[in-house]
Image (cartoon, rainbow, N blue to C red; front, side, top):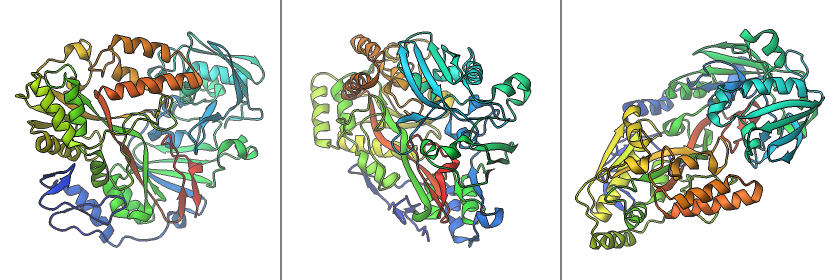
Length: 553
């Protein structure tokens, strides 16, 4: 049971309740209690309403898995929209890729390509699996793969926006596919991991159905879709993976999978508790508090909450001030008090296993004494603190971002005596201070701006520092407020490398930018799902949720 009393907030995973009395200690300072929204309390009360306990399998049959999903639906059902988890949760069971990731280690692994070899800087050969067929009965071979891949990576196509461009595919044998790029590209495999392969026969014979009747080679066949209501897929009896269990990381147990679209968090939680679904996707902190610790899946993945300081400004232009700000708030307290006891703090924007991850980078420690000393040094050398520092985040960017800003604000006020204000902006207002507009950020930020951004980033797309590091750390980056031309040159050389050389070079640059205290990690933001007691769920490092991740208890 979840108890709500005066001076208490909702619990976090790993705790029955989280008490916030008239003052709360976070980061070694005290501040007034956070007022949680009414809808969170209503969601929590679902647990007191005596909902039913029947399982979804009992209603739908033991061979049906039922999942409640939010209303993040695909504009269409083509393979080009299957790159993101919110769509791949369905489409990723229908389409497959040349390469996948091992769900245990996150390393790249064979999928429709059994093996591959890099021939030169711009040429790769992929040996395709034999005996694979699309759901429409057509054969998967080098010719059909080339036709499909050339289409989905075409110039101007959706995948170009995610770096999949300049690729060309050609059959040079019945099951040997040649992939060429228009320039040396050390991320060919990582890019191909984003590319799902549709039926070439459908593209040729019935292109109008491509966006509404998805046909792939995956373990499930598309059955039906009603926008805003429900998706349904059913098991494909001719799936090649049945004969190659060692290559597919699990054979799906379910004959049918139904995805119920339930936009409101509270309705997804209610559906799970009523036994209407086996899994509720992304229920948030409060949803996990409602279902209880045993049914909550806390998934600390690749979404990083981080902080950016206005390096060109009059106050934060001094690196000692930026270092002091990083040392003056307690990341560990923020993580555990606001998100849960198992949530990790971080000093970098990469997850372990990503190219450029540096194991020697630690989160900045909480050291208010050192922080005060640095501020006094800067003050003695002429830095003035007569203007307020403005803490900014985007409305709805991540759960409890307002509370994170409050904790940092009070730490800086109490520990450093600074004037700090908070602004939570709508997306348009936020973009004006967050992104490059008409000129590079490091040139256009005025000395009296003094903005600190608390935001999120993710390495999920590529698991490589180059995935978005360039936009944050380089002179011309659309999010970069710092410019070092020497760093840019070394970055340009590093991203040309491959393998261990690339990893080592990017790891060194990663550590160097952390030392500047322009961008700093705070914590790895957790995702919260809820699962029925009758189902076992496997977490994947890339955040995807596939049907073969679920097994019966």
